[in-house]
Image (cartoon, rainbow, N blue to C red; front, side):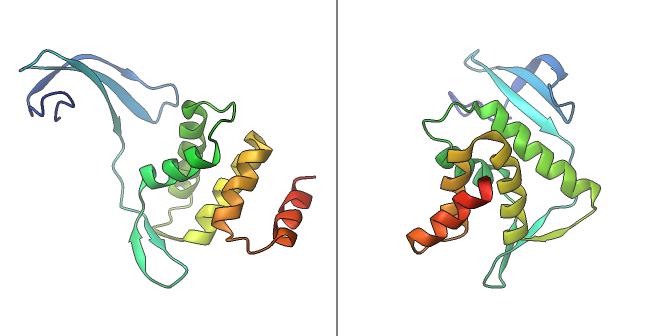
Length: 148
């Protein structure tokens, strides 16, 4: 594992324990060159999930890309990054349980929206406005009606 401070590839595991969600292992590592400690997470490796985009092209699923979109939607809202991590974990668990290797970007967005609506109304509308590409005020109003 590459040290975030100095870039050295050699480190040792100082502590290892299951994460709160039980789907990953949290490891504390220490760089053998500079001595800095950092945390890594080990997840079960499965077949890669392919996202089919609206234009028909495909790309590999990127957890960080989904997290970035959710973080933007949740900016200045009382939502912890851990809550968003749990939200993404639940989406990934649902996809693993369904044994899907491909999913449409619209379906993935809908899965995120359902969970986000339970978490925060404002973040839901923010995410929906980008994901659904609202073009006018009426589309915003329709999304707000869906929350009632």
